[in-house]
Amino acid sequence: IYESIANITNMFVGALFIPLLMAIMIGFLMVHLLTRPITELAEQTEQITKGNYSIKNSIKSKDEIGILATQINDLSDTIASETATSNMESDRLNSLLSNMTDGVLAITRDGTITVINQAALDLLHIPRTDKAVGKNISDLLKLVDKKITLRKLFQSIRGFVVEPDGPDGVTLNVVASLVRRQSGFISGAVVVLRDVTRQLKLENDQKNFVSNVSHELRTPLTSVNSYIETLQEGALTQKKIAREFLGVAHDETQRMIHMINDLLELSRMDQGRTKMDTEAVNFTKFINYVLDRFDVMFKQGHSMHSDNHYKIIRNYDQKKSCYVEIDSDKFMQVVDNVINNAINYSPDGGNIEIGINETDDSIILSIKDHGLGIPKKDLENVFTRFYRVDKSRARKQGGTGLGLAISKEVVEALHGKIRVESTVNVGTTFFISLPKVDTSSSRFDFS
Ligand code: ADP
Image (cartoon, rainbow, N blue to C red; front, side, top):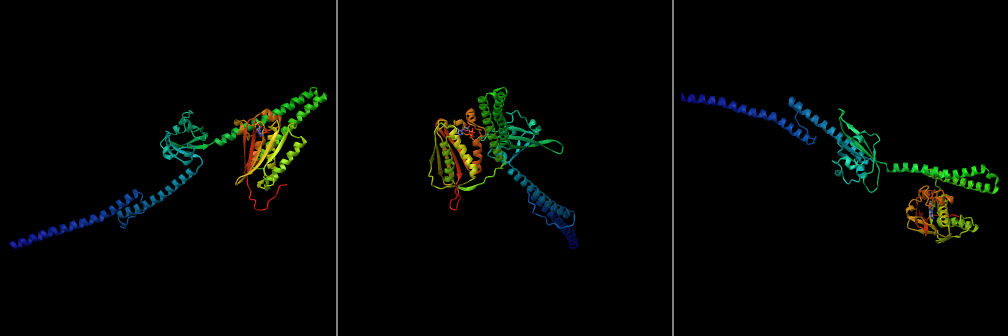
């Protein structure tokens, strides 16, 4: 009986524990089978969060987890392609911003700078982006000093002109365009800085030019007019006076024609319409030719101050050839003009010394007089249109104030440079340098 009871107990224990063990094993198996794909998906989503879209899950089952797994793979692909597109857009925007010549800043609605491009850094003389980002645009552009509030800046269509601190004294035009969210809320603005220094200078030059031309033409016209009026009022009958008045009127008219021709020449040059007929010329021979004409003129006493003695001294080796590429007619006008100035502004006569010097790559012509000289403050302006140190003297000598401006344009069109050194009552020297031409090949000799 006891044996049977033990057998039955064993059978019960076996029947109870074996299925329990099996149930536990099956349970473990099921849990493992269920959690493995979920763990894999969790790892994949973690990688996606970190920006790694190349990892794909390998779950192939057809159940809900399988569907979820396929959708996460698709989601990863979509995010990868969207991110690539957005990176490309941002690269394009960055390269656009950094290649723009205008300065661009993005600011929040309270004026804090969030983005600044290289051009803006350069224009504002800021060494690095981090020196600007986070700062307020009002402080950076000193808008408060000009009484420009952010509201005014946001509302202005044409913007404002500011002059930021800096060594080169640039003038900037600041224009803001608002950035609005879909709801209409203004989240900030994009501010564009444009360098308008040159434009303002041009506008100013243009205004001065018009006023100068009007003034220059009005003066001779008024004088001609008054002479004609006097003649009409009876002076015509007095032959001597009439002849004198007509002579003055003729001189003034000549001067106006001269000035208008000069102006037309300058305007042609400004528009790039002047054709330079350049050829390689033996410069020494060319200068000899120009100076010979002056020698003849002095001998015949045709100079402005014919009673004074002028002499041209050739301080260069007249036999030594050197070649430059010039438009002979136009360059002759330049040399004529500078020598005529040397004569005109040396009322007591004297020597005019001409030199030709060579450097490695250029030929330098110097024209030195011992005349009135030019005050230091006027030196840099003598090449400016209509600039004359002594207006009444220059006018008396028939000067238009355009000769040196034209000379400068011609010399620069020939890739050369013109400059002046002068001391008052000692004299003036003009230096004209031209690029040297290779003399190894056969060249045209000026004669
Ligand atoms: P202008 O027709 O008045 O001579 P330019 O353009 O040739 O005009 O010269 C401009 C000004 O430069 C002159 O009015 C004169 O004041 C000054 N200038 C030019 N050359 C000389 C010189 N050799 N000596 C002194 N002043 C000069």
